[in-house]
Every structure is written in structure tokens, then in C-alpha cells.
Image 1 (cartoon, rainbow, N blue to C red):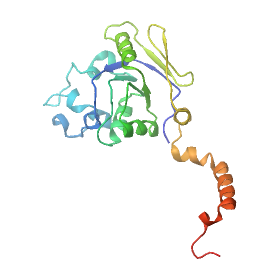
Image 2 (image 1 turned 135 degrees about the vertical axis):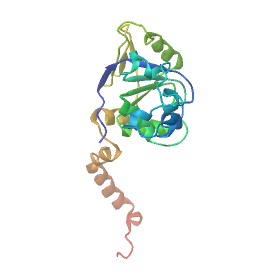
Image 3 (image 1 turned 180 degrees about the horizontal axis):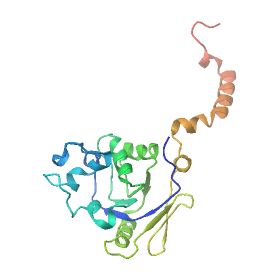
Image 4 (image 1 turned 60 degrees about the horizontal axis):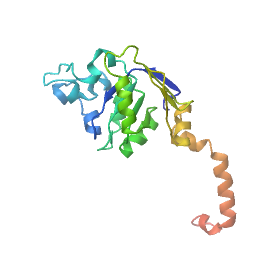
Length: 211
């Protein structure tokens, strides 16, 4: 069962490169000379976070002190494109991120986020760049709050940015439910539909070997 998402407050790490693919997000445990990660989070962006000897690169955004506990990632267009590896979502979530804000997402990655309690938010590139300026290193108290009940992102300056999700996706995140659980909640509606359809189109519901 996915972890429910209601609201999250924390720093927003800006990583505005376009076309960050799932192989980059989840490169595998042998990336950057690292052999035995203790958690999935250790390998997140491994080829960017570590040098060839496995030491952290202090210039990478998630290695900076102000973003080590970031809850939000501000990303560029087409984030999560490429292969379908769901481990990209698992790594982001285990590292501590709960919300990814980008102009667009890889389709499979976008769907996987909802299965794992990670909120993907579409915003215009210009809006994300504005948020990144508020998240800049050294900005005092640069904490953001993503509130799914109110459908807003509150910025450190106190501005509120409207976010939109399909209702079925929003409800799933708020309740911590996956597609199977959402379908089972409609069992009575499904049964009524099947009863009407069977009466109206009985030939569609013939059982092999039946009368």
C-alpha cells in the first residue's frame, strides 16, 4: 500500500537539467565504483553524486548541506524519461523526496510515482525557475510546503502556487491507495454494471459449455 500524501514541508533541491532519465536516477550499485550500498538511497544519482573513487562530489545539489534533507525536487522537462525501471521511484522516495516538480515527465515514471506515494507535479518551466530562485543556497529559511488537500505549494516568500492533478490520482495519493484498492472500492458499481450489461447483451456473457 502506498504511503498517503497529505502535506510535506521541507527544502526544495533544484536540479533543472532536461531529460534526466531513469538510468541516471537509478544507475545500479556498481555505478561510480560503489559495490555494496546499504540502502536504495545510496545509489540515487550515483554517477553524479560520487566520483570515480566513490567519494561524494560536494558540488552535486543533493550533497550540499542545505539540501541533504530536501523533500522536494525541482526538475527540468521530461524528468524520468527512458527505461521503465521502477527502482528510480523507489530510490527517490527512500532518499526522502516526496514531491517532484517538473514541466513534464516520462509517462511510465509518472504512473509509477502514484503507485509509491511520490507526488509528481506539473508546472510551467518559468514557474519552476522562479521556485528555484527562492530555493537558492543561502536563502534564509527556504522551506516549501506542498499541501495536496489545498492543492497548493507555499513558497518561502509566502506565495501560493496552484497545483492540479486528475481527481482519481489525487484521491489515490491522499488515501494511500493503489489501483487495485481503488477498483475494489467500486465493487458494488461494477456488479450493477455487469448485471445491466448481462441483461442487455447476454451473448457477450455466455460461458463456454453453458446452456
